[in-house]
Image (cartoon, rainbow, N blue to C red; front, side):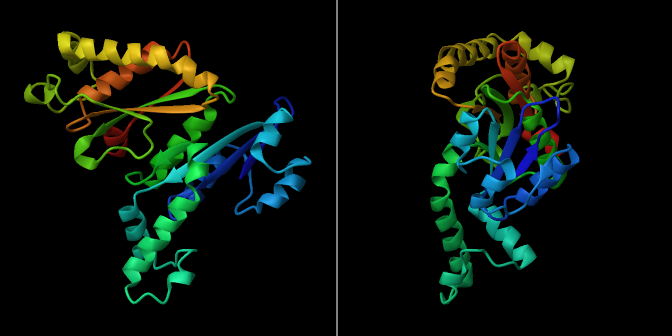
Length: 274
Protein backbone atom coordinates (compact mmCIF):
# COMPACT_ATOMS: atom_id res chain seq x y z
CA UNK A 1 0.00 0.00 0.00
CA UNK A 2 1.28 3.47 -0.82
CA UNK A 3 -0.06 6.89 0.04
CA UNK A 4 0.98 10.28 -1.28
CA UNK A 5 -0.56 13.42 0.18
CA UNK A 6 1.39 16.57 -0.74
CA UNK A 7 -0.11 19.75 0.66
CA UNK A 8 -1.12 21.04 -2.75
CA UNK A 9 -2.86 17.82 -3.83
CA UNK A 10 -5.89 15.85 -2.67
CA UNK A 11 -5.18 12.59 -0.85
CA UNK A 12 -4.35 9.58 -2.96
CA UNK A 13 -4.16 5.95 -1.95
CA UNK A 14 -2.54 3.28 -4.10
CA UNK A 15 -3.21 -0.37 -3.34
CA UNK A 16 -0.72 -2.87 -4.76
CA UNK A 17 -1.74 -6.50 -4.64
CA UNK A 18 -1.48 -9.64 -6.73
CA UNK A 19 -0.03 -13.11 -6.87
CA UNK A 20 2.77 -14.08 -4.50
CA UNK A 21 6.02 -13.91 -6.45
CA UNK A 22 4.64 -11.55 -9.10
CA UNK A 23 6.83 -8.58 -8.16
CA UNK A 24 4.91 -6.56 -5.57
CA UNK A 25 8.10 -5.56 -3.74
CA UNK A 26 9.57 -4.26 -7.00
CA UNK A 27 6.42 -2.21 -7.63
CA UNK A 28 6.52 -0.82 -4.10
CA UNK A 29 10.13 0.28 -4.56
CA UNK A 30 9.10 2.07 -7.76
CA UNK A 31 6.54 4.11 -5.85
CA UNK A 32 9.03 4.87 -3.08
CA UNK A 33 11.39 6.22 -5.74
CA UNK A 34 8.53 8.37 -7.06
CA UNK A 35 8.05 10.00 -3.65
CA UNK A 36 5.20 7.94 -2.21
CA UNK A 37 5.00 7.01 1.45
CA UNK A 38 4.81 3.21 1.38
CA UNK A 39 3.72 0.56 3.84
CA UNK A 40 4.40 -3.10 3.03
CA UNK A 41 2.04 -5.91 4.10
CA UNK A 42 -0.40 -3.55 5.81
CA UNK A 43 -3.31 -5.47 7.44
CA UNK A 44 -6.58 -4.15 5.94
CA UNK A 45 -7.95 -3.21 9.36
CA UNK A 46 -5.04 -0.80 9.88
CA UNK A 47 -5.93 1.17 6.78
CA UNK A 48 -8.42 2.91 9.09
CA UNK A 49 -5.70 4.44 11.20
CA UNK A 50 -3.43 5.23 8.28
CA UNK A 51 -5.88 7.38 6.36
CA UNK A 52 -8.00 8.45 9.38
CA UNK A 53 -11.26 7.23 7.98
CA UNK A 54 -14.08 5.28 9.56
CA UNK A 55 -14.15 2.45 7.04
CA UNK A 56 -11.49 0.34 5.37
CA UNK A 57 -12.94 -0.53 1.98
CA UNK A 58 -11.66 1.27 -1.15
CA UNK A 59 -15.20 2.33 -2.09
CA UNK A 60 -15.50 4.10 1.26
CA UNK A 61 -12.27 5.95 0.56
CA UNK A 62 -13.62 7.13 -2.79
CA UNK A 63 -16.80 8.37 -1.12
CA UNK A 64 -14.60 10.61 1.06
CA UNK A 65 -12.90 12.16 -1.94
CA UNK A 66 -9.77 10.02 -1.64
CA UNK A 67 -8.42 9.00 -5.04
CA UNK A 68 -7.92 5.22 -4.97
CA UNK A 69 -6.02 3.24 -7.58
CA UNK A 70 -5.55 -0.53 -7.39
CA UNK A 71 -2.77 -2.37 -9.17
CA UNK A 72 -2.81 -6.18 -9.45
CA UNK A 73 0.42 -7.91 -10.44
CA UNK A 74 0.02 -11.30 -12.09
CA UNK A 75 2.22 -13.90 -13.76
CA UNK A 76 1.74 -17.27 -15.38
CA UNK A 77 1.78 -20.34 -13.15
CA UNK A 78 4.86 -21.60 -15.00
CA UNK A 79 6.69 -18.33 -14.25
CA UNK A 80 5.70 -18.35 -10.58
CA UNK A 81 6.84 -21.97 -10.17
CA UNK A 82 10.21 -21.07 -11.70
CA UNK A 83 10.62 -18.04 -9.44
CA UNK A 84 9.80 -20.04 -6.32
CA UNK A 85 12.20 -22.78 -7.41
CA UNK A 86 14.99 -20.24 -7.96
CA UNK A 87 14.52 -18.54 -4.57
CA UNK A 88 13.61 -21.75 -2.68
CA UNK A 89 10.94 -19.81 -0.83
CA UNK A 90 7.72 -21.45 0.35
CA UNK A 91 4.43 -20.29 -1.05
CA UNK A 92 2.28 -18.75 1.73
CA UNK A 93 -0.55 -21.20 0.96
CA UNK A 94 1.62 -24.30 0.66
CA UNK A 95 1.56 -25.27 4.34
CA UNK A 96 -1.70 -27.11 4.07
CA UNK A 97 -0.43 -28.94 0.99
CA UNK A 98 2.95 -29.89 2.47
CA UNK A 99 2.00 -33.53 2.95
CA UNK A 100 1.64 -34.08 -0.79
CA UNK A 101 4.43 -36.39 -1.98
CA UNK A 102 4.93 -34.35 -5.15
CA UNK A 103 6.26 -30.96 -3.99
CA UNK A 104 6.03 -29.51 -7.51
CA UNK A 105 2.36 -30.44 -7.62
CA UNK A 106 1.85 -28.94 -4.16
CA UNK A 107 3.36 -25.62 -5.32
CA UNK A 108 1.19 -25.56 -8.45
CA UNK A 109 -1.91 -26.30 -6.36
CA UNK A 110 -1.03 -23.49 -3.94
CA UNK A 111 -0.61 -21.03 -6.81
CA UNK A 112 -3.91 -22.02 -8.40
CA UNK A 113 -5.68 -21.76 -5.03
CA UNK A 114 -4.31 -18.26 -4.56
CA UNK A 115 -5.38 -17.35 -8.10
CA UNK A 116 -8.91 -18.48 -7.31
CA UNK A 117 -9.03 -16.58 -4.01
CA UNK A 118 -7.83 -13.35 -5.66
CA UNK A 119 -9.94 -13.58 -8.82
CA UNK A 120 -12.57 -11.07 -7.70
CA UNK A 121 -9.94 -8.56 -6.61
CA UNK A 122 -8.16 -8.98 -9.94
CA UNK A 123 -11.31 -8.05 -11.84
CA UNK A 124 -11.52 -4.72 -10.02
CA UNK A 125 -7.91 -3.62 -10.59
CA UNK A 126 -5.52 -2.66 -13.32
CA UNK A 127 -3.51 -5.79 -14.13
CA UNK A 128 0.14 -5.98 -15.16
CA UNK A 129 1.40 -9.36 -16.31
CA UNK A 130 4.98 -9.60 -15.05
CA UNK A 131 5.78 -12.99 -16.60
CA UNK A 132 8.23 -11.51 -19.11
CA UNK A 133 9.19 -8.32 -17.28
CA UNK A 134 12.51 -7.69 -15.62
CA UNK A 135 12.58 -5.55 -12.47
CA UNK A 136 13.59 -2.22 -14.08
CA UNK A 137 10.93 -2.57 -16.78
CA UNK A 138 8.23 -3.38 -14.23
CA UNK A 139 9.27 -0.33 -12.23
CA UNK A 140 8.99 1.83 -15.35
CA UNK A 141 5.50 0.46 -16.10
CA UNK A 142 4.35 1.12 -12.53
CA UNK A 143 5.67 4.69 -12.51
CA UNK A 144 4.08 5.51 -15.87
CA UNK A 145 0.76 4.04 -14.81
CA UNK A 146 0.51 6.02 -11.57
CA UNK A 147 1.67 9.17 -13.33
CA UNK A 148 -1.56 9.04 -15.35
CA UNK A 149 -4.47 11.12 -14.01
CA UNK A 150 -6.54 9.29 -11.41
CA UNK A 151 -10.32 9.21 -11.52
CA UNK A 152 -10.74 8.64 -15.24
CA UNK A 153 -10.44 5.73 -17.62
CA UNK A 154 -6.85 4.95 -18.58
CA UNK A 155 -6.34 3.30 -21.96
CA UNK A 156 -3.23 1.13 -22.30
CA UNK A 157 -2.02 0.02 -25.74
CA UNK A 158 0.45 -2.86 -25.72
CA UNK A 159 2.30 -4.53 -28.60
CA UNK A 160 3.49 -8.11 -28.28
CA UNK A 161 4.77 -11.19 -30.10
CA UNK A 162 2.55 -14.25 -30.37
CA UNK A 163 5.74 -16.33 -30.18
CA UNK A 164 6.04 -15.37 -26.51
CA UNK A 165 2.37 -15.66 -25.64
CA UNK A 166 -0.61 -13.36 -25.23
CA UNK A 167 -0.25 -10.82 -22.38
CA UNK A 168 -2.21 -11.94 -19.36
CA UNK A 169 -3.27 -8.36 -18.58
CA UNK A 170 -5.06 -7.74 -21.90
CA UNK A 171 -8.76 -6.84 -21.95
CA UNK A 172 -8.89 -6.92 -25.76
CA UNK A 173 -6.50 -8.72 -28.13
CA UNK A 174 -6.17 -7.99 -31.84
CA UNK A 175 -4.22 -10.36 -34.07
CA UNK A 176 -2.53 -8.50 -36.95
CA UNK A 177 -0.32 -11.32 -38.27
CA UNK A 178 -2.22 -11.37 -41.57
CA UNK A 179 -1.01 -7.88 -42.48
CA UNK A 180 1.97 -7.17 -44.80
CA UNK A 181 5.16 -7.77 -42.82
CA UNK A 182 8.10 -5.33 -43.03
CA UNK A 183 10.32 -8.16 -41.79
CA UNK A 184 10.35 -9.45 -45.36
CA UNK A 185 11.86 -6.18 -46.57
CA UNK A 186 15.67 -6.42 -46.04
CA UNK A 187 16.04 -2.67 -45.47
CA UNK A 188 13.34 -2.71 -42.77
CA UNK A 189 14.00 -6.05 -41.07
CA UNK A 190 16.19 -4.69 -38.29
CA UNK A 191 14.09 -1.59 -37.65
CA UNK A 192 10.89 -1.35 -35.63
CA UNK A 193 7.42 0.10 -35.98
CA UNK A 194 8.65 3.25 -34.27
CA UNK A 195 11.06 4.01 -37.10
CA UNK A 196 9.98 6.37 -39.87
CA UNK A 197 10.83 4.00 -42.73
CA UNK A 198 8.71 1.18 -41.27
CA UNK A 199 5.86 3.58 -40.51
CA UNK A 200 5.98 4.89 -44.07
CA UNK A 201 5.88 1.34 -45.45
CA UNK A 202 2.87 0.37 -43.33
CA UNK A 203 1.13 3.67 -43.97
CA UNK A 204 1.07 2.72 -47.64
CA UNK A 205 -0.57 -0.67 -47.07
CA UNK A 206 -4.35 -0.57 -47.51
CA UNK A 207 -4.93 -3.59 -45.25
CA UNK A 208 -2.97 -2.00 -42.41
CA UNK A 209 -4.96 1.21 -42.62
CA UNK A 210 -8.20 -0.76 -42.74
CA UNK A 211 -7.20 -2.67 -39.59
CA UNK A 212 -6.32 0.62 -37.87
CA UNK A 213 -9.71 2.06 -38.81
CA UNK A 214 -11.58 -1.02 -37.57
CA UNK A 215 -9.83 -1.06 -34.18
CA UNK A 216 -10.39 2.67 -33.80
CA UNK A 217 -14.06 2.30 -34.68
CA UNK A 218 -14.49 -0.53 -32.15
CA UNK A 219 -12.88 1.48 -29.35
CA UNK A 220 -14.71 4.69 -30.24
CA UNK A 221 -17.99 2.78 -29.92
CA UNK A 222 -17.29 0.97 -26.63
CA UNK A 223 -14.99 3.19 -24.55
CA UNK A 224 -17.76 5.53 -23.43
CA UNK A 225 -19.83 2.54 -22.34
CA UNK A 226 -16.86 1.14 -20.43
CA UNK A 227 -16.31 4.48 -18.73
CA UNK A 228 -20.00 4.69 -17.78
CA UNK A 229 -19.62 1.24 -16.25
CA UNK A 230 -16.93 2.72 -13.97
CA UNK A 231 -14.07 0.90 -15.62
CA UNK A 232 -10.83 2.63 -14.70
CA UNK A 233 -8.42 0.70 -16.92
CA UNK A 234 -8.63 -0.91 -20.35
CA UNK A 235 -5.66 -2.70 -21.89
CA UNK A 236 -5.70 -3.25 -25.66
CA UNK A 237 -3.05 -5.69 -26.87
CA UNK A 238 -1.96 -5.79 -30.52
CA UNK A 239 0.00 -8.87 -31.55
CA UNK A 240 2.05 -9.84 -34.57
CA UNK A 241 4.63 -12.54 -35.20
CA UNK A 242 7.71 -10.90 -33.69
CA UNK A 243 6.27 -7.89 -31.88
CA UNK A 244 8.65 -5.57 -33.74
CA UNK A 245 6.90 -3.96 -36.70
CA UNK A 246 3.16 -4.19 -37.33
CA UNK A 247 1.94 -4.35 -33.73
CA UNK A 248 4.35 -1.59 -32.67
CA UNK A 249 3.24 0.69 -35.50
CA UNK A 250 -0.43 0.19 -34.69
CA UNK A 251 0.09 0.83 -30.97
CA UNK A 252 1.92 4.06 -31.79
CA UNK A 253 -0.84 5.20 -34.15
CA UNK A 254 -3.70 4.24 -31.82
CA UNK A 255 -2.08 5.98 -28.85
CA UNK A 256 -1.72 9.14 -30.93
CA UNK A 257 -5.35 8.95 -32.06
CA UNK A 258 -6.82 8.51 -28.57
CA UNK A 259 -4.51 10.56 -26.38
CA UNK A 260 -6.51 13.79 -26.75
CA UNK A 261 -9.68 12.24 -25.35
CA UNK A 262 -8.41 9.63 -22.89
CA UNK A 263 -5.57 9.11 -20.47
CA UNK A 264 -3.36 6.94 -22.70
CA UNK A 265 -0.29 4.79 -22.11
CA UNK A 266 1.66 2.63 -24.53
CA UNK A 267 3.90 -0.38 -23.99
CA UNK A 268 5.99 -2.45 -26.37
CA UNK A 269 6.61 -5.72 -24.58
CA UNK A 270 9.28 -7.10 -26.88
CA UNK A 271 11.05 -3.80 -27.63
CA UNK A 272 11.01 -2.65 -24.01
CA UNK A 273 12.48 -5.95 -22.85
CA UNK A 274 15.31 -5.88 -25.40
